[in-house]
Image (cartoon, helix red, strand yellow):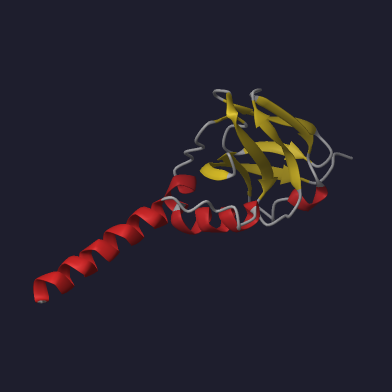
Length: 145
């Protein structure tokens, strides 16, 4: 009897592990995924590991209104990307990753705090499944006078 109970508990644990490893995250918007990413990967952003983002480099300075771009190291036509600044709800660029460069105009709500930086986040998905979250810190200053 005890062996059967232990077997059932182990089977349930295995099934829950398999089920949790394939969570789609399609019920979460990109901002919620970014919050999870920040909570679980603060070491990655602290080490300036920007994933597949080739440009901008960490601590690049941009001004509000500048036409800039995010460039990825490789293209992957099966994936889509949403690019935005953390703690803003506006997606600044995105689309299928059949191209590697995504241009956009730096929005005013992305301005860094005094002596601070802003986190630029790229959420990549394939068939609505979360693939990865890439990030890089940039300094966003007010518009040039």
